[in-house]
Length: 286
Ligand SMILES: NC(=O)c1ccc[n+]([C@@H]2O[C@H](COP(=O)([O-])OP(=O)(O)OC[C@H]3O[C@@H](n4cnc5c(N)ncnc54)[C@H](OP(=O)(O)O)[C@@H]3O)[C@@H](O)[C@H]2O)c1
Image 1: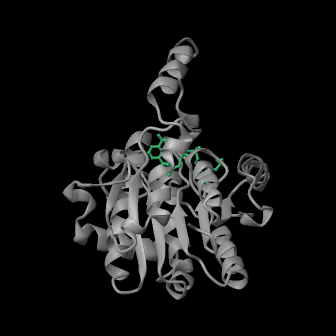
Image 2: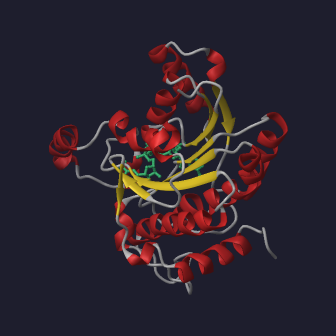
């Protein structure tokens, strides 16, 4: 179903990205695992090869740190030089509720990685995707976008940092990006859609402190109530390859079903303003 296609998955070494990668190679697609920790990605690639019996040529590890503009540029230069086509880009990597940290370029980490890093990555790969059309961009967001708000006066949370709010804002930014990009891609043969994976048992909660006494109960609940990474990857896989959505543009999905978004995630004015500011921040426009 995906043989002959090349897919980039960001954050492919862990959680949903890893399960998405395994799902794509099972369908015969080739995955470029775009990861900041190359050793961890090589290890994941080895395990996926064993689990799936995939041809070793179907998994390629490349270094990408979305918290660094220079790393994103180097990664994309390599792709443009080496890859004749790119069929699917899955913007999956994410940081959740980390302590206040800045990226190499001075952006608050959640805004910087979840939104700005993927914004620049997509921008730099777009020509190749247009040449490879029909092609698809898949944006992994979250229903927690509902609690976010784009505060243009303090995008980097310098005045006030609430780690949960900053995560929600970054996931709202993912949806506003999807909304604006969908408009810009009209007629190009490239589609972009976003999704929420649900609550999934992954390493995402690494910065969330669960008291030692509550850990057994938390683990029990997560095993009982959370999705497995494989289940959490289903909507990413659906948007990456299902013929049902080949012409669908700018929509939000959960459990492989379209969802209605709150107005704040589809507000064209806010989406366009965020786009313009993001271009300046990542240095596309001076
Ligand atoms: N799990 C959930 O319940 C849930 C719910 C809603 C949305 N999501 C979204 O799902 C996506 C995948 O998360 P997950 O749950 O699979 O979590 P995860 O297991 O922690 O995976 C996150 C991935 O992002 C990568 N990453 C973090 N910072 C990066 C950077 N600077 N450059 C490149 N890669 C970076 C991580 O790399 P390292 O391993 O090197 O840190 C890891 O591969 C995220 O966008 C998250 O917001 C998850």
